[in-house]
Image 1 (cartoon, helix red, strand yellow):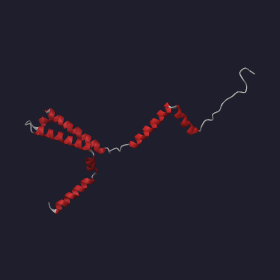
Image 2: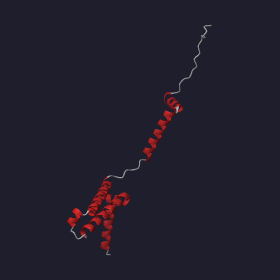
Image 3: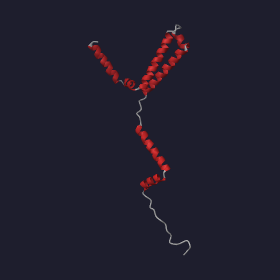
Image 4: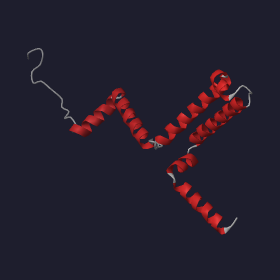
Amino acid sequence: MSKSKAARANDIFETARENPYVQRVMEDEDLRESLRDAFESAKGAYGRASGNGKGTMKALTSDKKVQKDLKSAAESLRDASERLQKPKKPKRRLRKLVLFVLAAGVVALVVSEDARKTVLDALFGAEEEFEYTTSSSINGS
């Protein structure tokens, strides 16, 4: 390969590598699988439609296998398109942890009287405890 062809190939490679769609295809295994399935289904439909001797239009309209392969290819392309359009959602581990701790705290407060008392004391201060004694007796003496 000459230097100009090598430089051109390198430019194409760098341009493709910077493309966000190419990056998504390189990073997303499910996207690659959808594209691969679409290609295989389309290839099978084309091979069956063009090699059956009936004619391509006849195969498209009457051959159930060709129609099934085309439908599968279309579904795989739709899946790939949706994966390309939707950005990959980051995992929300911290959010899940906070929700779990909050739910566990609520359950603890509902179940344990001591936990409720501790939280109320921390929020509003400890209750003053006192003993009530009467100066008179029940017999009246």
